[in-house]
Amino acid sequence: MDLYSLLKKRLKNFWDWFLDLAVLEWALPLILALMAIIFELIEHRNELDDPYFLGELAIFGIFGPVVIHIILVWMHGLMDAQKKANAEVLSLNRDLEKKVNERTVALEQRNAELDRANMELRALDEMKSDFVSLVSHELRAPLTALNGGLELALQSAESLPPRSRAILEIMTAESNRLTDFVQSILDVSRLEAGKLAINFGPVAVHPLLEQAAAIVLASGQRKIEWNVTQDLPPIWGDEIYLEQVIRNLITNADKYSPAEKPIHLCAELNQDAIRISVKDHGRGIASEVGERIFDRFSRLESEESSPQGWGLGLYLGKKLIEAQNGKIGFLSPIWKNDPTASGSEFFVLMPVAQAPEDDLE
Ligand code: ADP
Figure 1 (cartoon, rainbow, N blue to C red):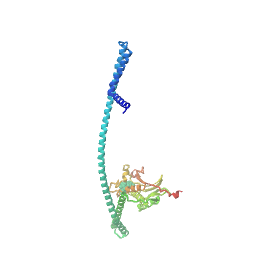
Figure 2: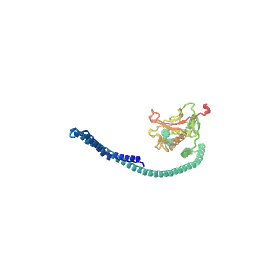
Figure 3: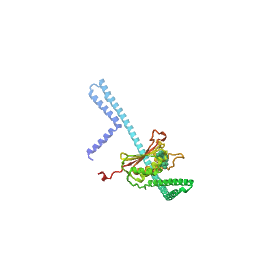
Figure 4: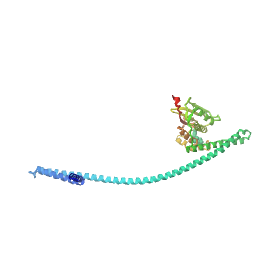
């Protein structure tokens, strides 16, 4: 190292040492006092007993340096306090980091446990779904045979005594109900397992509604009020599943509203979608029920005399409509001036089928 660098280094060390407040708080006042005394002595060298000399000496040589010393001591105190606070923050940060690390490790362990439990639950759920699907599947064949036999027996039921005929009719109705239930369970388990294939295509709205109504209201006793816009474009969806959902909505309107009141079947263009709705004159659905009505096994009826059901139709309906990129919902009350039969409206919003590009040109 050459002399210049050595000097520079020493000077810097000295300067750092001097700037240290513990040195500076004494050094600076002393230097100032010394300079003031020398300056005053030179200035008043012939009049040392002059009261101005003593006064200036007291002000610049004693009072001024003392004030500067006090200010520097105060600043030193402040800086020490700040250093202490910084050290405390640092130590708190270190503690915090340690705790966060500990918690992260604990959380990771917990996550791993949860993952394991989740996998076990999923495996159990799959086993349950497979079991339900198997049982439903196995039940379908004997039920079909049973239904066929009962239908056949009913065709020649005139020769039977009235009581036997009535029993046969009840058996047919119950067997049909059980078949519907088994079919719903099968659809639900297929849907939940992601095995329900949706076949998209254009679906004409009016014929779809007419067919669904003809099947559900086959007896012809229920009055239907039609309100379908003319020349509606087709829907883009799966005709079979769409009809299944509409049939369930009409079945519900029929089940949960007085027989003498009409059911309204409506369809209209709603921006880019077709809105199909089924309105009834039933007692309506309380607003707090909300989306819960679309839950699995959700039923609002509690009385013994209520219409029978499984609480699966709307659940399945919502899943089927959403799988076709549509929406399902309900409004209630809809007849506000009829408080005893304020009714409900179940609606489905389905996308319009786009015309093929050849047609657009
Ligand atoms: P289910 O009718 O077989 O019980 P759904 O899933 O189709 O099953 O309906 C669920 C519940 O929603 C019904 O039990 C009924 O309480 C209520 N609900 C459905 N549609 C109507 C309606 N149009 N009016 C009043 N309540 C209804």
